[in-house]
Length: 119
Image (cartoon, rainbow, N blue to C red; front, side, top):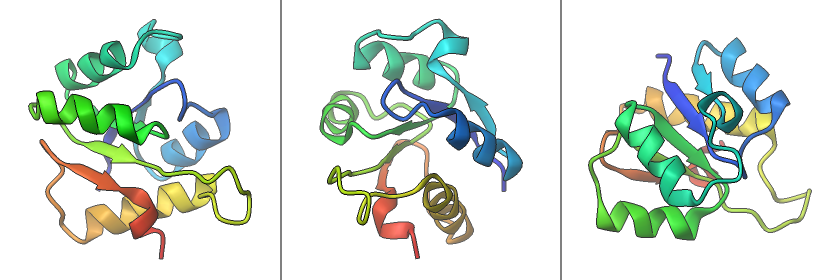
């Protein structure tokens, strides 16, 4: 099932956009939204106001924003170790989203760590 996904600044990657779109998702980037370099709260609000899942590699800040306001389409977190052998590849991110959606997990108003879905 295709999703509408917003990538914040730290998740934005042209290759990831391409792979997500190839998988059938609609992707909105911070460049398209005019939010490049804006605070996390601006990214959060844009995604929430437009019914977009928010994908970020900045988990802590967005968990805090979720705790303050759970009225959003969902937040997908990616934890990184800055170790290429352990960090998720773009293909793993796309596969993890597919796994999460296929499992029928509730997305609206929830936070999911994609690292746990990259099997």
